[in-house]
Length: 196
Image (cartoon, rainbow, N blue to C red):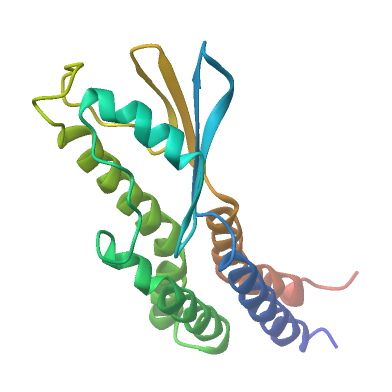
């Protein structure tokens, strides 16, 4: 039974990672809440792999005054949104490979691929935020210097403060990456322990 433990843990961790990735596919990647004195409850935005939800109408109307382009999250403006289902499938394949292969280098590459999903998603959102803050209309009623909203943490502009943080999808994908990275090693150490 002790010899079977690594195999059981590998299979269980692979199934757990696949489940986490499947659940993550339908959850938000990134969230932001904009607060100001005139909006005590805040204005929220949730970015999913293939859509954006929230108070976009109100946010677009306000950002127009400082010359920001409207937040048009669509496949034409953001072609990477088409890739989200493929990213999830690649993550699932990498998770299976990470627990199935006996080759250490291949397992490390597969684990790194799963870890890269949340890192890459946040990097992409940060790039889009940089675009939003640097593509300002010079003829807008209120002039502000180009700025870069933070992908994680607070950003203040005039009387607004936005709080941004990773969505639950990225948290689950990071959990899946942690499972396939560390669970097999833990099981191997348990199997090697001498029974008293």
